[in-house]
Length: 91
View (cartoon, one colour):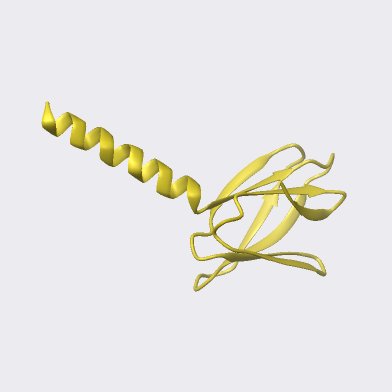
């Protein structure tokens, strides 16, 4: 019984930590967008996000997103960003 409670507590804690440090990007446009996502201390990743799609990325230490000439930086406290009109908008 105690082992089951410990396991459930661990799973709940892991879920809360991962969601708090994740950045969700939602594409609200009618066309797909490609951007570069670079976590602090990590490697840049090319992301293609289809129209009306969402993706979740690890930004526990913060991250930078670039789309064309547009560049935005987000810390771990920002959890949701939307692409609207070809630009990043905090939600």
